[in-house]
Every structure is written in structure tokens, then in C-alpha cells.
Length: 324
Image 1: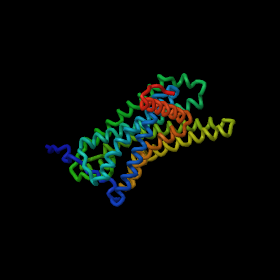
Image 2: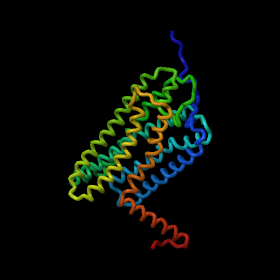
Image 3: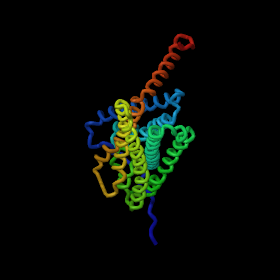
Image 4: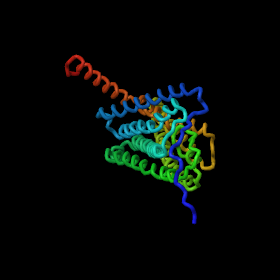
């Protein structure tokens, strides 16, 4: 009769972070802190402006508001612990907290795959089928697509977290990464990870490759429509906007695919960390820049909201409640 083994003898993990760059810890802390604060501030502004300006209550800005809300939580799942680790090298995280971080990372990361794909589909309808756009992308349809993105992300997070939590961890407990990610955790397991590897690989293909393909196909049709615009200035302006959108989603999908859709490839831990920085730290900052600061309607709405807020505060400071 086979002897039953303890599910996990490891009660906590030690995140090594950027242990090979000890002399750069202070600089890395300052850089990541600035990026994090800018990310939170930029995405908060987007959510506030879109929520308060009725002219921005269109499907495109609804998707943008949800993406910005998602980005704040997504980066907050990773960066605060990274900053704490830079201040105190080798910070420990309990097994349950590690599994919780892993779940929210996969859940929010998967949702971030679906939302840009829905946004690309929305732009495809607006540019390629403008006469049918209001019917095909009604507010009700937009709400259903947003809800589908969130619910699919929630469901996607369960399988990897469940598979990892059921593995045996007998030691060592040193995770050579700055957060609880799938590859370094599977490398620490003292039990067979074949089932988990295959399941996560298939899930990654279904989520990442499907969403990236949908996004690319949408932009192929968009570009073909742009080429038919008679005005050279109109083509240049639309190309600039779509090119920026495609660049940021390519960075996100490309780095994620290189991490999780490569079952036989094993990059060094340091290369994995650099790749991970792009989709956990850099992309959440790029989204508000690409999707809002380059948008004329949004910038005008932001200025009006700012003037209105400043007027309210000025009136209160003067003891009145009238806005000129």
C-alpha cells in the first residue's frame, strides 16, 4: 500500500526578485515606484473622466473605462509586493497568499487579453461598418461583451491556481522571480508537473492566441479600410492611432505568449523577469497614454472636468457655491 504524502511541506515562499542586481535596488525601487504611481494616476483619471462626461458614454469609452479599472488592479497585484521586495531583499510570502496572487494575476491578465480584443472588434465595426455600427454595437451588446470578458477572466484563473495549489512543495522554497508566477513555481515542485504543464499550455494557447488572432484580424480589416480613405491626412491620422493601439497590444500579447506558449523552451530566470516586467509594469502604463492622451475628444473632456472641479473648489474656498 502506497504511503500517503503530505500535500505541501512548504508553508511560505521566498521571492528572490532581482537578487543579481543588488547594487541597483534603490534605482529599481525609484523607477518602479514612479511607473506605478503614474499608472494608478493615469488610469484613475480615465475612469473618472469617462464616468463624468456624458459625451464619452459610447461603447469605445466604456471598454476603455473597464480596461483602465482593470489595469489599476492588475498592476497592484504585482508591483506593491515587488517594491516591498526591493526594500527588503528575499521577502517571504505565505503559501495561501502566493496562491491568491497567482489567481488574481491569471484572472486579471486573462481579462486584459479579452478586453483589448473586444476593443479591436469595436473599432473594426466603427471603421468598416459605420452604417450598421449603432445596431451591431449597441449599449446592451457592449455591456454583454464587457461582462463576458470579466467572467471569462474569472473562470480562466481557477484552473492554473488549482493545479499549482495541488502540487507537492518539499523545498527549497526560494522562488526565483518577483511574484508568484507559474513557471518558477512548477520548477520548485517535487511532484510531477506534466499534467499542470500541458493544461496550462493548452489554456494559454486558447486565451492568448485566440485573443491576439482576433485583434490582428480586426486590424487587418481596419487597415484595408484605411487604405481606401481618399484624404492623405485622414489616412495618416487613422494609421497613427491604430498603429499605436496595435503596438501596445503586440507588446502585451507578444511577451505573454513568449512566457507561456513555449513548453519546450527554458529561458534563464533573469530573462523571464525582464519579459515579465513588460506585461506587469510597462503595459499598464502605456494603455492610458496610447488610448487617452492621443485622443482629442478625451483630452477636451478631461480639460472640462478639470475646470469644473477647480471651479467647485475655488467657489468653496471663497465661501460660495457658484461656478462661473
